[in-house]
Amino acid sequence: MNTAATTHQVTPDVMPDPAAHTSFSFHIGGGVADTHAVPASVLVQILENAQRAFELIGVHVEGRGIKERARVSAATSKRFQLVCQLPEPGSYVIPIKIGVSDDFLSVDLANKAFGIFRGVMEKISVRRSADFADILPDGRIVRRVLEAVKGMAPRADAQWKLTLHDAHDTAFATFDTYTIPFIEETLVPVEQREAARVVTGELKSIDFAERKITIIYPPTNRELVCIYEEAVEDLLYEKRRDLIQVTGRVLLDEQGTPKQIIDVTDIRDLDLSALVLETSHHAGLTLKATPVLAIEPVLDETKQLLCLEQRDLGIDVFAPTREALLSELNEQLWMLWQEYAKANGDELDATAHALKRALLSRFNEVSCAPQAG
Image 1 (spheres, rainbow, N blue to C red):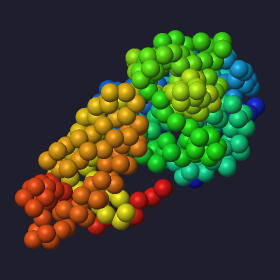
Image 2: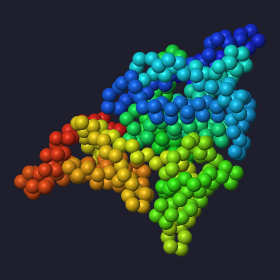
Image 3: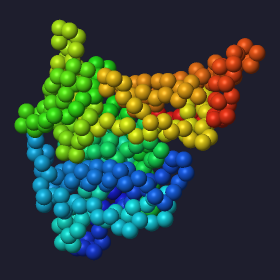
Image 4: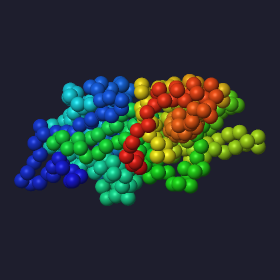
């Protein structure tokens, strides 16, 4: 597959048609049932981060680099603007035109940017990080583009996936729940990931000059300074809610409580929306929930742990992040299925019998191909 199938080069004899803007489309689908509608939050998340990725690549094709704390100029943003067309039938299809200007230079640069965009997206889709430098040599821009793609991809418990199609309706990249872990493994060395911890706190201030944010740590009600890395800075320009989750290396005081977070690699809003589970996979077991299981997580008293509970199904799990929470839920469902749903009824007391019936009425064990990733 060509990585720039729709890219045009300017030559003395051949000039690009100024009306022939490069185009592609987003296809949002998956989940419980494909529909012709998606939540506004998902749509905004995808479009904002795709725009950010295009602007960063645009800086590169203009022959410039991203300097420390430099922002993308208004002229670059306009030249590489993604223009949404009317949605089309499908799971949810958004046609995209690149650029609003019809001058030859802008059209050529937009086409070059799409060629790089497509190449990078293809490599992310097949998880080939070693080839990024061949397509986009500027390492700083690559890191920021990858951070933007994290915002385009579904989180661990999301019920959708994103596929990118070119102007000929050929799919060239798909982002699913394995995309973000791949990007995090690419961006953050394994030693740094192993030393990292997630802290939830109330956002107090952002200091772009010093490259730090200050949060209020709920267990102690003390200020916690967080020193972030350059590639994370774009995340701070998004509208942040009160409670955020910061991932980095936590430094402790003499009492063993956090006093500072350094090497911050991720900053995100705390998501307390319902965790939706259609199928559960763990240790070779696949369970299908009917109807779909949806449980709203709540914070524990320290506001550091997300908790899920559904007593009739024996569910009671907690973890610092949604990703970890989903993993804990899958593991507990596996345990409940082995110890109760598949247990001999003669060995169970009345409470255990009730749990066995609840599990069997809500889940079915199904055959499933091994998960990729």
